[in-house]
Image (tube, rainbow, N blue to C red; front, top):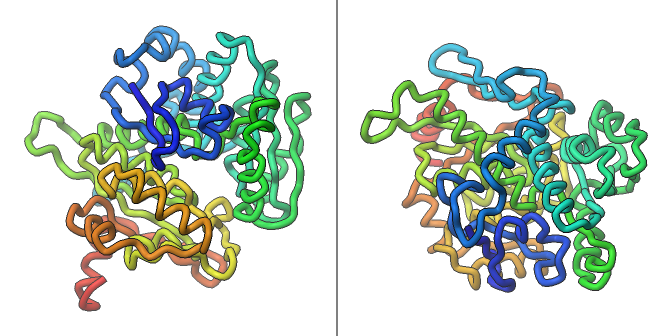
Length: 383
């Protein structure tokens, strides 16, 4: 299985290369996206077998050994066809425990083979930091540095990050929000010599392994919700995805492109850049990040949208590179009509804004969210 750069500025790599992408000189600052994703993901032979199936099973079992639910991920069936996929049974109660616990096991496996040490640098809006710390704390070949935006995380997440007393865990409080602290991290990773000298890498969702594991959420949910796979065509399942940096959205979208029959309904808070991108083609920053109860979603720069743009453009690296470089220069991009129109023609995913109500609650449709939204839009004469 090969992985390629969405901007076409790096050679293709195998899974091991993609995992370490931020820590290698030639792939610094390059977003990695899977070019060919077989049904076996890491097990099916490609250019080389990344991890032997038996070893892979052991690594995943080890990753999930501390989850509180025996199923690891549990589907709760409510009424009127509504189901809730419980992704919070990990140690830090965040859905990112799933992807980060697996990613950490993959990382340690390859580090032991290489007999090397890495330093992981993580910027966080809350849940990534605590889940990343939990996944690597106490490991001998990984040090982790977490930048915590003071006053922008929940109290429990802040305590999860600042009360770990392992020698390989280093947490620093910084001024500004999570988008602002991403800038110095980008600057660090742009210094190729520095990155190579100190063996730096990231565990934010720009890391392909994170997205790879999150794809499994969508497949698992579909198999649990579908009573039979013997029907043709397979039934469509609607999946509501709360999102900030669009990592889980990208995972669902790639699963959809593989052939999983799901409709994605994207839930955002008042930091609505993804909503504006889908509805209007307006991929631009607002004046400031708005604080909400869902602080982990208080993000203005959903960097995983680059993966979505790459797929929408027909895997056109030149188009993707031009879009992202313009966004990095001007913080504003209007999607080309031909690119934005493809979203409607293919009906790949739908958008539903989840608005904060009086700063004290978040209202989410209970039932068929997308269907209810379409009905409301028809009543308003469009959408």
